[in-house]
Length: 141
Image 1 (cartoon, one colour):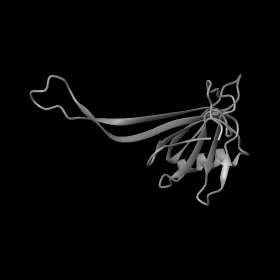
Image 2 (cartoon, rainbow, N blue to C red):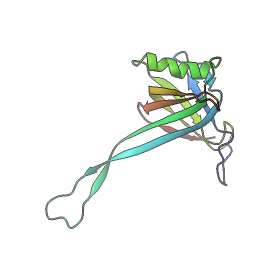
Image 3 (cartoon, rainbow, N blue to C red):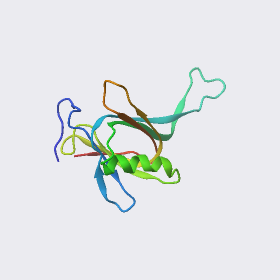
Image 4 (spheres, helix red, strand yellow):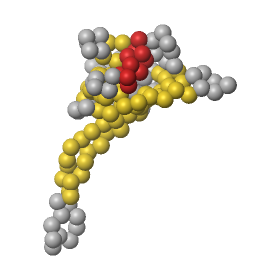
């Protein structure tokens, strides 16, 4: 297992989509991705306390993936099709610094939307938004 003892760099980052049949498809032409994880804070302050107190509540994650849009890519097509089937839960694997070093982030997601942008002097891009369903797992590679 490789451990990154320096600074992560993102140029080798990767995104993989895991289908209902457990087939893993790499998503082509990824430009960037973002994962946000947060834990709900529950206030437990009582009358007479001098300071507010909190305890950890439920956690959640969400994020987005930005790609150059490609009609021939199964990974992108799978993500985009989940917007049309909102009852479906997908599984993703995110590799911030590549599939052979650093960490893997994985979890089940609901694909909540996507946008496609096009302009006269650039490539057509898509942004795919997702909401986690369950825990986000962080695994050293």
